Length: 389
Image (cartoon, rainbow, N blue to C red; front, side, top):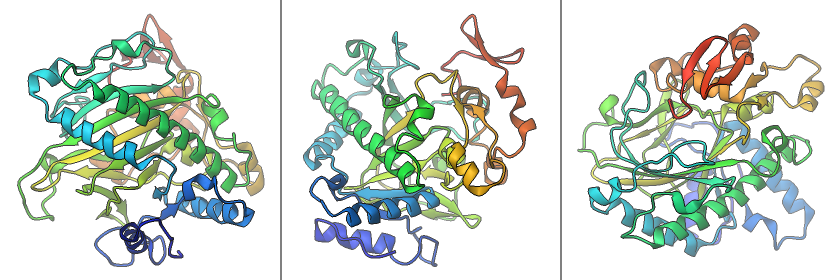
């Protein structure tokens, strides 16, 4: 990959180091994720060749499945203020954060607010998630934002978080369109599968607690801050500090990802791999608890609005171009989400990663319904909507 020029010298050096050589591991400690300069999303570039080159870079990055974008058009001052106010929130007294505990809110897909450390997401999870989270729904915004349990001692938190969510919505839509364009598709090829221009965005602000230093080769459930998985969502956009902790799985081993605080890291999810008919990849990743430091990150997720009725499938044009059957069987988004959410942190993810190549695997998910507020696959109840999230 060619060296990518960036606005600041320090950032340029990081990009060059992170992205040099091919996209595959070359023996260094850190996995060299692609780093793509979005050039402020091309507002000041009239040369069509510049855009064409950028689209090609994003297409190649999508084949890896995770990559970092810089010069992404989000105001740097907003990002700095956002990181600072989030640190201030997690530094609040525990009783103040508990007052912001997650609350079911009409019009929202799941409870919003604060969730403390060591919360077991599901009884079947291989690891206990070692992180604090404050979660909001960015879009659709049909619910009353005033009902979110915002911290009274930090009034600036709400405005900053909502402004950040809006900026990430714009970047998300642009990325979805450009990744489709990179495969020779219409810009809305992926978006229209999940409902069009408006999609469900969930924003999770996360703080990972400091762990005592220990040898890197010692990795056990107590040192995993968020377990190994590929994403069930369409894609996740991650903003983080310079502490590190994210790891990706490649060639049967784990590699650290060198953070670029000025950038936004994208992880394409299983639905994107399915929609692209395997041309894009969903990369397995996890978060290891930081040593002698705390870690901050914020994740903006992309999901369909009408999860119950959304069927994820390979874009027909991509199937036709190959002249062969689709590599992935169509599946119900929410049916799969609810059936697999409690299993995706188990060790088998490393050898039995989800690949929709057998129709029998998903026959039951086609018989998906909601009856009396309870989700069912066939006659089997799956529990309430919040179970497994």
